[in-house]
Length: 197
Image (tube, rainbow, N blue to C red; front, top):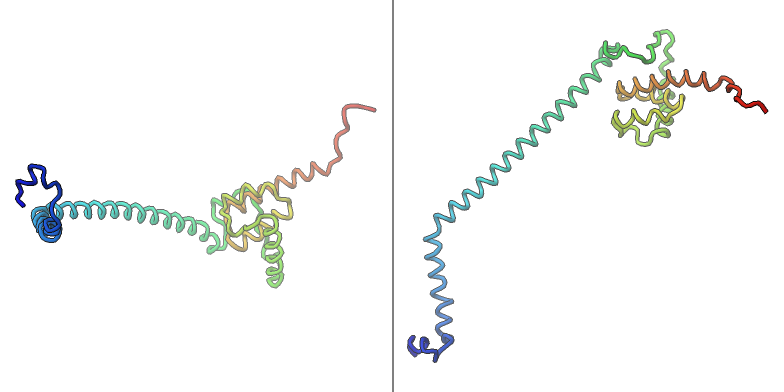
């Protein structure tokens, strides 16, 4: 059987022997020749792809590291601002706003009574503001307005003995002062109504 027979249409399909030779011999040889010829292009494509991925990873890594550094430095600054007045034993100059004045040392309660007060304050705070210890100051401050006088006093005691966040202490003090003013008004007899019956 010649190749001419295939051109005349007499042999439309190659013989099984021819197909076996194509698959087992010529295809691997052709693949090897193609790989050898195209190897430099494949290497350069692979190199470009890896360099692109590494460049992207570096950019993302730098971004994440810088963001983490900013967050840590901000937390450290916050901690320093909040911790320094406690370490010094006296309020900072910017804390001199409205708030409860520190009591003289002679009127401070005896040390054994302090744990009982802390426990009571913790119970009141826990009942008034669920998950108080997990809340940030920005989450606590708006919720203080819904608390009563006893709860606000408990928040002041608990916060002062634990995290000592100035924004919470300041707002609770303000609300207590406002509460005293409104309590005085609430206890006054209501004005007579305008209609006489």
